[in-house]
Amino acid sequence: MKIKKNKELYQIVDEVEENVITIQPIYEAIKEHPKTDKEEICKMLEL
Image (cartoon, rainbow, N blue to C red; front, side, top):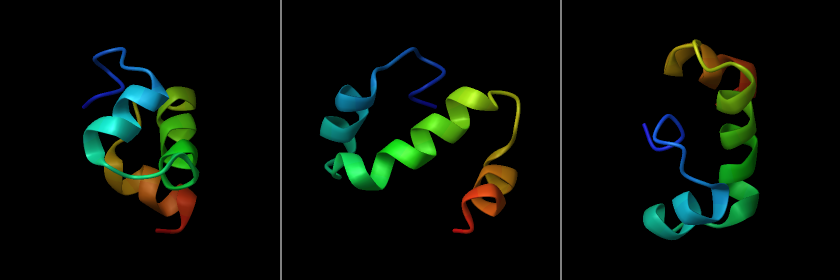
């Protein structure tokens, strides 16, 4: 996972070719809950 590799938000946005508005909530949720799996993160964000 890119966040676990200590990548910054704007670097991830550039790599996945998405905008900050889309990526930022996911990025922040993962940073706040680093041990949570992707399914739980999705539920938290209602994706």
